Structures are given as structure tokens and as C-alpha cells.
Amino acid sequence: MSISGSFDLPFSLHEKFRVTKAGKSTLRRTVDNVLLLVSYPHRKQISCVVGREHLERIDEFVADLRWLDEHGFDMVTDFYIMFAYDSLNSGDSSQLDQAQMVEFFEGVLDRVRGTKFERAVYYECFKEFTHGYCTHQINCGATNFLVQKNGDVYPCHRAQAEPDLKFGNILQLGLPEIAAKGAAAIRAYESANEDLSAECIACEYFYLCYAGCPIERNNNRGNRAYTCGIQKAFYRAQPQRFPPKPDASRRLVDSFIRQNQPHLYDDLSVPRVVKFKTEILDENNAVTAIIARDPQLQTLFRRGAVTLEVNGLRRELFSSHLYGRMTQAALTPEDEVRLHVATDLWDLNAGEGALNAVKLQLLRDERVVYGDEQREKMEHVATVDLYPAELVRTDAGWSLDLAPFLRQHAHLLLPGYGNLLSVTTLKAREYHYAKHARNAFYHLNTVNLPFHEFRFSYGERGDVEKQKAGTPLGMPALRGAD
Image 1: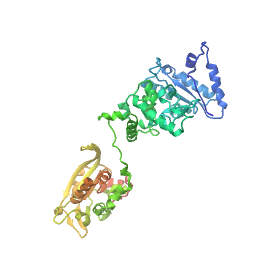
Image 2: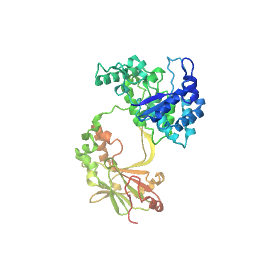
Image 3: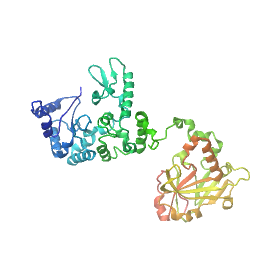
Image 4: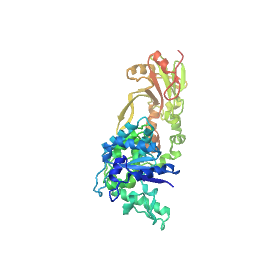
């Protein structure tokens, strides 16, 4: 059996507030009872609620915490802190504001830094801000149950004062019915709460917080967790444990709104995520399956349909969309660099007499926002179409000298492997975009350039020698014979 209890720290506040009706102190008896738990072999925990007066007594708070630990009660693992909040119905005011909660957290942390209690601050004292707590879900009604002695079921102790949050009676209903009623009750309760704040909708820590306890927000008519400020400070103090996750948080905000406050989306200015279609997960709609059904795409994506030659050494190029990696080359202005386009790729979508060309698109690792989509992409540096007059006909297809193009744009290239060249033909590109128009799944799979490509560095030979030992994407850098 687990035993839990609460009292006030520092002891001076317990002495001030926790008195009998006759005005007598309860401190000695409370401390003795806490110390009795030292020998209790099962789970036990004590907590204290922190309010406005604690801010002036942080030194006392830490001193009494240490005293209890020295007298045998494990204040590292069996003690946690909660913050008082002002209910509109209470008529009392003891709640710290957002900045004061952060001040208290940082004050305690500064006083215990370098001791075993520092870990306690991070892991136990504020554990309601960490994973697995009851508030860390979109709807707590289906999974959290408090059963009173008469069988009435509520989600938690706070809910017992909320008639709307009685889920039913366990003596009359089965657990599946209780869970269903609980989920419906919380949805209705959340719908009547204040609208989720713009700060919550944009917050990259929503995946940890879920806007806090719905009952707390209802009681103080708040539109976000009343502990929002300290929670962010707590997460930012431990970035490896609690990294910001804007994408995950945004999806969870969307789920929260759709389940609990769908009326928010009546306002079209409220940002929302795209409604996800599970068809995209069907293996028949994967880009590889689409290619397998289309001989033209098989040619367009064929590995080696474009090859890169540096000083006589050739390497097949391919689309990183299919293979998850990319050829890389360490190049200098002195290198002989050629591209070879196979006949089948040149002929793709090019009827007799069609005007075709090799299309080169040079990009670099500067992030820019393009077009109506407003997506962040690599910066386009140059696009060039090379027609047959500038190419060399070979037995295997067409060849071009890439060195003049590289020298022409050398002043725009980034150091390291921050440059990318995409290679296709005009007619293959036309077929690719026509397929976009015909097949939404192909469009989603290839929304970024999917053509044959390679990354490269471009500099003096001494710099290249330092770079060619390895590459950021895990493939050896291509170098020809000197």
C-alpha cells in the first residue's frame, strides 16, 4: 500500500498555517509522523504546496529539506512540489505569477547545485511537469479514475467538487462504459473552458504539457497551464531530456482542438495542420511502387542513367529520394569533370524531332523560402539547359564538359560539401511534372527535386585533400587520378 501526505515547507509556514481550531501547533506531530515513514517498506511520498510566501523563504525551504533528509526521510526520491493556484471561487490569493514561479525554481536550483538535491530538482521535485503525469494527454477521462467508497467515479481528487465530472458508478456500470462516459465528460468540460491560447497553439513544448490540468484552467478561467512559465524554464534547463519539438507539438495541438474545442477552427486565421490521409502509408502508394508500375519512371530514376566522371574515374549518379544517400565529389578548378547521359534517359518522352536538352540545376545550402507554398528549401544558384550543339554524342548517349560551368559559378559556391547539382533532361522533367498532375501520391513523394544528383566541394587542391577522407552523407568523395 502506498502512503502519501502533504505538509508545508519551510517549517515556519507550517507553524503559521497548520493549526488546530484551538490555535495549537501541529508541526511537531506532523514531523514525527513523516519520520515514522522512514521505516515503512513500501512506496511513500510527501509533498508541499508552494505559494507567494515561499518566495521570501527559499533559504529556509532548502534548509528544512536538508534537515528532513538528514533525519532519514529520503527527500531526493520521495518528495515533490506543487504550486498553489487561485480558484475564482476561493476568495484567496496565494498563487505565484509566472515569473515568480521561475524565480522560485531557479532559487532552489542555485542553492542545491552540485549536491544530490540537484538531481531531485530535475527528476522528482517537479515531476508533474515530466512524462507520464495524468495531465500529459489530450483527454484524461478515458484513463484516470478515482473511485469513492460508494462507487462513484471521477477522474481525480480535484474533480470530486465538479458534478459534471462524475463518470458514473462502478457498481452500476462496467469499466468500458465508465471510460466512454469519462472521455465524453472531459470533452464537454474542455469545450466549456477558455479557448486554448495562441501561446499554446504555437508552443514547441505542447507535447509535454497539453495545456495543463483542465480543472485548474476551469477554476481560474485560464487559457493555458498556470505553471506555463516554470515548465518552459524546467524544460530549457534540460534540453537533451526535453528538446523542443515544434512538429510533434503542432500535431498534438491539432488533435487537442479537434477533440476538445473544435469551434476554434471556425476562425480560419487559427493555424492548423493538414488533415492526414492514411492512404499515403499504403505501400502501393510509395514512390518505389509507383515507379514499378511506370516504365517511363523506371528510366527516369534508373541508377546510372547519368554518370559523373572526374579525371577518368566514373561513378553512377542516382536519386537520393530512392537510396537515402548521395554521391559526393571533391573537385578543383584543375579537374576534368564530365557528365554522361544515357540514351534511354535522353529519349524519354522525346518523340522524333523533339527539341531536348540536358538540364542542370545548381543549389547550395543557404535556406530560403520559395513560392506560394512558402516552404524552406535550398537556394537555387543557377539553371542551365544544354542543347545538342553544346554536347558530345557518344555510343552510350550524350556527354558534356562540366568544368566551364563550375568555374563560371565558383564565386557562388559554398565551402565543404554545401553545393548540389541536379541533372536530368528537359523532356524527362516534363514527364515528371505531368506525372505530378496525374498522381497526387507521386507528387507528395517527390515534392523536392528527385533527379540524379551529387554534392560537391570546390576549391584548391590542398583544401580538397583535407576533405576527401570522408563526407557528411557517408559515401567516399569521388576523386580521379592526379
